[in-house]
Length: 164
Image 1 (cartoon, rainbow, N blue to C red):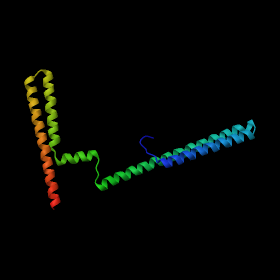
Image 2 (cartoon, rainbow, N blue to C red):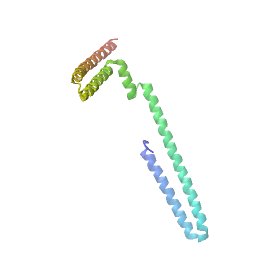
Image 3 (cartoon, rainbow, N blue to C red):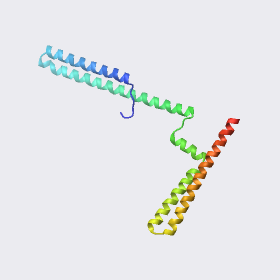
Image 4 (cartoon, rainbow, N blue to C red):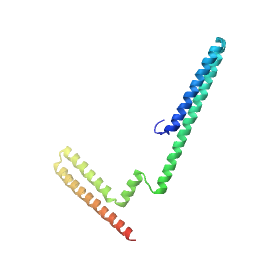
């Protein structure tokens, strides 16, 4: 089971129950083995195998319970995140894009100018490559202006929100 955190106390108690159950089975087998003849040994072995199978079923049921509890905790965490206004990274990215769309657009323009300039440089078209490198610098400048403008607008919103 990957990604499931178990409570150390519950895990220790479970392991202690497992070990005591195994010891009890082994002691009972040894006691019976000493007391009976070889004919009855096969029946005891079968009984022990049935007990081990029952024990494995119990262990699997406990693991399923742990998985269900983890899913419930995750669901409640997601609900709490939604109700308290916490947001996932994707939601935060989308919110920031809506607040200041010029920054991602400037980044895209910078990347496009750089890529096209490098392609032209590789092809040997120096004039277009040089033009694209100048366009890249311009796009970077406009992106920085967009960041500063977004900060200014955000600061103004915060300032006016405190006044009212």
